[in-house]
Length: 406
Image (cartoon, rainbow, N blue to C red; front, side, top):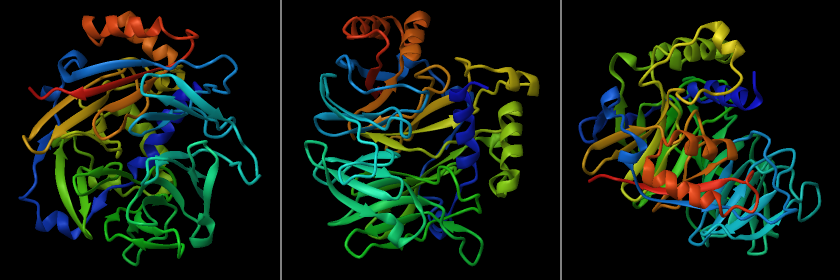
């Protein structure tokens, strides 16, 4: 199987084992909207996208940026886009302004004082500077992309930080994997990390038993607090002022994932993955979450199932354009919901600066969008103009957009 396809499928069993359980979910079940996930919510990208802009990344010749099929990692500040396209083999970081002009790049894989092992996750400090998780270290960079602070996470537990965001002074809100089970067999994966005392204060939100590896949670600022989301969970939670409450839920009706599927132990994960991808008998909530303005975004596998035979799955060389992964957009205030395929196949995860959504379009993706006209005539013309501004036609383009609710 093609490496990019294999990695995409590999992600699913990791996140599929997590779902949320909280006392607040039951006590507040009548006070938050439940969105129905059906084929009726699907619209074309042209109907969904608003204020679309394509940003050609003008990468100078010789810049150490390479594409090995990994999903891109981005962090967007008020005036910068930080990008990593290879976390392991050539973990370089590239800085652009919001018009796509290249500012600087670094490639410092190594064990020296200003070097790092990998780039596993990008984020921002409270001041809007770049931060990153590198294996067992949390790195904080200065404006020259020199490492200003290096925090050794190994001292406080053998966990992997998979998402993080500044919380209070000298504290980070983090999503972890590799935590130990509680006495009841469930897991706590969100915590507040104190960078001075090097301690974790775990939040009471619990997940179902899981393998302990893979995607375990997602964090995004929202109003006066944060949204917390887990893969396979049909509920997105809101954390603020020490309290966790459900903000919204999603309901796929008879396509909802069975409870026993959410409780699969590690040794059953591969079998469950193969069955889910092939039969597509139920919807799967990826567990990522992003916010732009009033819009909350996540991704759902299913909705319009296209079952595959085992032989088709084995022989597949790339993700088909109509692979049933949809962007789902929800507006809790007006209780509106839309779903769309913004990009063909999988196309990576979206990112946000709080006002706009962003995602990186690799060469094959933006070329496919040009060929199919999937974004509609107006947006396709804008994409064509952006592609003509690239220094190299093999370089990627960033799409920035909002969601229309009129």
